Length: 227
Image (cartoon, rainbow, N blue to C red; front, side, top):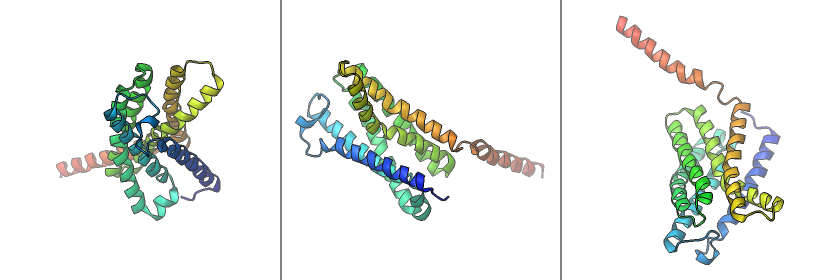
């Protein structure tokens, strides 16, 4: 499928923004200095879990961006598959670590609630994406990858929402702004992802593609039993 210049430009710009914000967010943890950690911590173990979550999440972002470049899928399918494995290999542990870190949050349910929901949905999307790829259900795989990367991108959009809400509501409670930004970070992303999936018609052929093989199989079995 030919890629339009507009779509290619949108991919390039959005990819650059995602990578730039991700690199900035992860930079505070490169030196492994606990003093630079942004959230409050229980101690070194909590910090280690947080660092592991952030770095696996960073790998997921870097590998995930590449999965949406059509020319890579078309011209270098092996590279696409390898980076896909890297993506899943990063998302699965990072999402589990996300749940753990959310429970360790010092800010209570307001902070842990959205991060827990996000991490669980992120894990589920990766499982479905991996399962559909292994079953060669590429239409469903594309849909789950879009949903999954919408959740992966919450690490980026959460910071943008935080800046926006902080600027619009400078006197608001910081924890309330933080919690609201965390909810918006993935809820809005998922809504946009579903709009994109429906507007591009990615679900249009899924029912017939999924039903037809099973009908054909049953018909073949019926003919075989009659014979």
